[in-house]
Amino acid sequence: MFIPNTEAERNEMLQKIGLSKIEDLFSDVPKEFRYPDLNLPEAVSEMEALQNLKDLAIANDSTDDLICFLGAGAYNHYIPASVDAIITRGEFLTAYTPYQPEVSQGTLQAIFEYQSLVASITGMDVSNASHYDGATAAAEACVLAYHHFRGKRNKFVLSRYLHPHYRETIKTYFQGYEKIQITGDSAVDGLQTNEDLLKFVDNDTAIVYVQYPDFLGRIHDFKAFAEQVHAVGAILAVSVNPLALGLIKPPSEFDADIVTGEGQPLGIPLSYGGPYLGLFATKNQFIRKLSGRLVGETVDNKGNKGYVLTLTAREQHIRREKATSNICTNQGLIALTSTVYMSLLGKQGLKQVAKLNYDKAHYAADQISKLKGFEVVDNGAFFNEFVVRTPKPVSELNSLLLDYDILGGYDLSNDYPELENHMLLAVTEMNTKDDIDYLVEILQEVTND
Image (tube, rainbow, N blue to C red):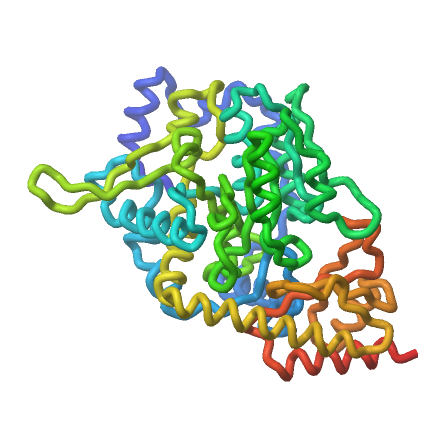
């Protein structure tokens, strides 16, 4: 490590703390542990180190090498080159939490634009900036609901087809709360319906959580469902795929109270699972229970437009142990990434990409349904994912598909034991008709006993 201090400066600092030499700083560490022998390889040059890393990297296959039909919450979408060109500018790449508005106008404006776009696509009154990913956003929605009812309502009802990671994160957040009951996501005979979920909803329910489209890719109309949730005074939260909102009606149209989601489809690369972006939008009535930050547009005393932190939770550095949220940063760079992506596409571009996902997924489902031994399950309205019952275990099929440079779908039996031999296939705008036809051809070949 390079520490840019002169000898004179080091001696001055040591004198201030009453020591004579650097070694005295480590006097509390037993001598036998101060300079242990480390079993390290011989040093290499930068050129050799870079080659070693390349050799390791080449062992991995990416979506550049394989035709990808894997989704389940993170998707292979096209990202325009302009996105990286803008977000890697120094003023954005190095910016962080905007505590001082007078010197953070660019960062604050970027967050303001992000909030405006998220509010627009969800149809909600207000959006914060922001959360770590879709899972933490979902958990924070439950935190909001718990505090909205001041702990007087203790039941959280989660759809079985809310993303499994989101459900686990919610349960992790609320470990230690003795009275909290998290229910609704247990296995049922067949596929859980809205009516099945409503059986868990009563006057003790704080929040009901559904996904739109759900984890299996299906699109449900929650209008009547929302009315029944609100009839008992509970909050309805909806986790969305934001790209799908370019095509299907926003959750505001069936009176959702909270909308969360994973922002990864909005121009954010797969990146081995992160960093991603947690979307969070609500009705105005919940604004003061919202974690994260809200940036507002205003004017200064000379009438010039400016941006300020209108509301900020200040959770850790003021409320500390009384904090209702653990969110202390705003994922500013990732939020900016999605802002640039949405701005470049615009309303019509977002709709066009969503329609490509929808049409290609339905084409794939139609072709696969013609294969002997394969069945598309619940072949109704779905977005870019659908469930296929397979004649062989999914893990075995995926292993065979890899031999043909195809990354197969998600094995649903990992999270849904009742869905053994069921694959969740994702199709995006990145999959050509030839890719889909090739998948169908290889599925037929590897199951032709």
